[in-house]
Image 1: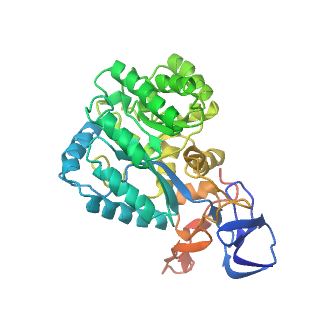
Image 2: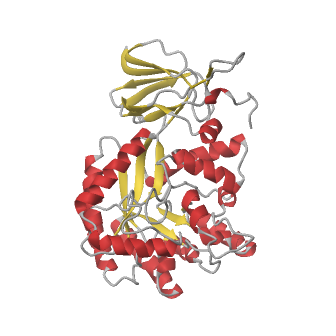
Image 3: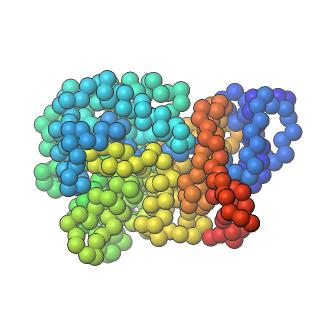
Length: 431
């Protein structure tokens, strides 16, 4: 038997070591040690970590790489970012949005990020952003799965044209219903928007991913409404609440009621550690709130937690690299989830869990799955998050589509080694 590609001696995220992965065509055929069959191409993993590709469940590709247009966010706040986007939006052209998005997808592929859920603003009835990202979705389909969310950035009710525009965006092929209840004019409008948007999703058989309670206000409790409407409309397993930062400031008694409601509704949570740490707590002096939602408590209640990147070089965030391991690295620090087990959980939160939240088919490292994977210059998930190492190989449907040489530093020190490999430093008992 001859395979098209054979990867030898890889470590896997679940702890298995020295595994061989045999690929025929675009699918994985076998995962086991000691495969002796011939292959047209062989990759020696040499004990490095082989992972399914990274998955970003929360991004804004219509705004990416637009930093400085039309000006910089001087205050660094969420609200100034929204105002800046409102200034930029009327000047957007389909061609410019497509060009920036394609450039970002190039960067994503180089980082082993092969699936992205992007919110696309539907507040402008011209829907230039929707047309642009539908074109991008088609153009990148061979190497990146792009899932789109119809997102009324200016509010489903607050923006008079958003309701009709959102419905048109769904008719055009956008797959997920979005919302932003905390940005509506009143709490009641926010509650009503959650109900209306869940009804639309239920009627169309779609998923829901709502910006929910992205604020420091502990009284912003639309996530409770989202959980209730999820159950009411039979949307269990199809709804995600993104950000959920108000939960950081809520009292513990209320949260003790809220988390079981979310679990009952089979909701997923999508925190965005980089942007949440940057934008929240802006009205605080000291002590200053971190703003990140209660990830460990959610995990303890069985709520799926998928970590998103949200922004790269746009009106809200002047940083970002396209690397989901940066996101997991920040989550380790902000949540104080520092054990090896914790880090494996957070590694899953940028791979396996967001793939489930997005409903990706054929994802994983098992026979029958798509032959999509990334080989990292590290030996396990904890080391991958610590180092954010080079992506030695990025493979899509059985073909190498990106590769980076191993990182090596040359030394000129008397009596010391000639080179340093940063992936060789973790003690065997690292935890």
